[in-house]
Every structure is written in structure tokens, then in C-alpha cells.
Picture (tube, rainbow, N blue to C red):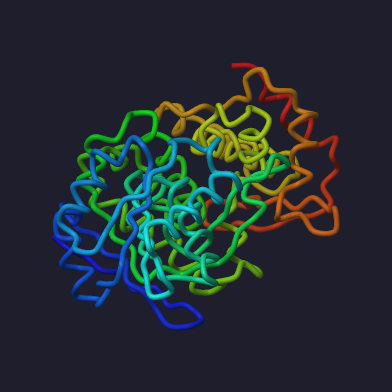
Length: 350
């Protein structure tokens, strides 16, 4: 059954379509929204033969632009290659970039759409669970620098987002579980029902994906440019981004966020802000979902140093999103580095 969630933005609105099999009727959806100009389908080497090229065969006036697969390619050199590709493929200011893929594709193709010719239209077609419930919604786009994750970016609202939960049936298991980390985050922020492991199975994706997206939509409508409450969506991400960076992105985003969620809750408890019982509850759920809850071999002090480039810090002051209880996030500044490192030390090991 098709479902639409409208998203209000400072300049208007856009729809998020949820429909099993939506990829098959994507050309019709684009036609209905008068998105019929020259379209470049931006994707990666894995998804190009599976989804992008079959779509291009059915979508008039479209071509495929492919980049390598993986976070390590979400860089300025890749972005430069995308710009050159858009010129070569004849995309003008009336054109459309259709980002078809996971979070990396949504981020880098979205930023390309925001900046190429000072902005062209963007359509987001997420194919991973993580991109469906999180990164495709809200207009944030970015690329990474060697110094940190997502340090170059822009807000770019899409014309629409199209979510086909059927593609999740073939999503690799590791990518499925990475997406569940973001669903758990949304549950901790605002919807405890999303913390039910019986719900978080592939067979019920069409049920819980719109529910998880609704959490994010409610936040980004209040704070489209991340001036206040939108920062709550970064629960676990200060730790997670640092872990991704020092691992050379061998840790996937969802895996790092899972560890970051545990770290944020442990820090909340250490500071006397939440019931310590919440630690066990979240660790048990993440363990059931086969997500990591420990740092492994990474040094806590190195993680702290990597956090220094976090975009959420201000004037060099540490800012962490923490929890008082499920549904009650808050931000705390100027936490003693020794306390943070102590929490991370507790989490060292497998």
C-alpha cells in the first residue's frame, strides 16, 4: 500500500513516497511531478546494473553516472569527477540529479546537486535501510575531508524522496543491521515502540520504515537548519563519526553509531542524568540485532582527539547529545574529557 508523508521546508514542501515496488513506477511518479528534464541518475558500481541502468532504460532523457562504492570515496576528488560527469552528460540548470543508492550516494550526489551550476533539482531514491530512515530526509548533504566526516556540505531539499521497501529484501545483511542502528536511535529519541525487536525484521519493513521516518520529519520541520532541536538527531554520532574516522572507514556508519549510542547512554548515566538500567536495555537490544557495543582495539584518547573536528562542537567546547530517559534527549557542554575517556575505556575490547 502506498503512503505519502509531506515534509514542510522553509521554501515549501516535498513528499516522501513509501510504496513496495515504487522503483518500477518511478518514471510515472516523476512525470506526475513534472520532473521530466534531463536527468542524471547518480549511483555506485554495485547498484548501477541492479537498479540504475534498468531505470534509465525506462526513463526518457536520462543517463547514468557511476562512482565507486563506499564511504572512502565520499571525497572532494570524487565530487570533482561528478561535476565533470554532469558537464559531459549535458546536465544544464533545468536538469535533475537523481541520487539512487545508500547514504554515501545521497550525500555526495545531493551536494553535487546543491552546488553544480549553483544548484539543480534533486530527487532522492534511497536503497539502503539507513538512507531510507535517515540520510535521505531533511536536506543535509556533504562530503568528507581527511580531517573529519561531513565537513564540507550544504542544505539541499529534494523535490521528492521515493522509498521502495522491496529493495530491502536483497540488501546485504551487514547493511540491513547498520540501518537498524538509526531506527534504534529514532526509537530512543521519540518512539519507544521502535525498540521492539519483533518489529525490526525485514518482513515488517514497510511497517516500521515510515514510522522511523516520521520521527525525523517531526524534528527537521521544527529545525530545518540545525539551530537547536535537530541536533538531537546526532545522538551517538559524535562518538560514531570519530570511530569511523580513526578506523579509516573500515567501520560502517551504522556499526559506529551503535557503539556511539551505547557511549552516549553510558556517559549520561555516569553524569547522573539517566537510570543506569538503560545501558543494559540498549546493549541487549543492539546485541540482539547483531550490532557492536564495544570499541574493539581503538584507543579512547585517539577517539577523543578525533572528536575535536565534530561539527556540533562550538568554540572548541565539547557538545554531546545525551538522554535523561527514552524520549528525553538533551545537550550538555563542557564535559570533563577525563570522564568521556573513562567511559570509552570501559567500552574497550571486543
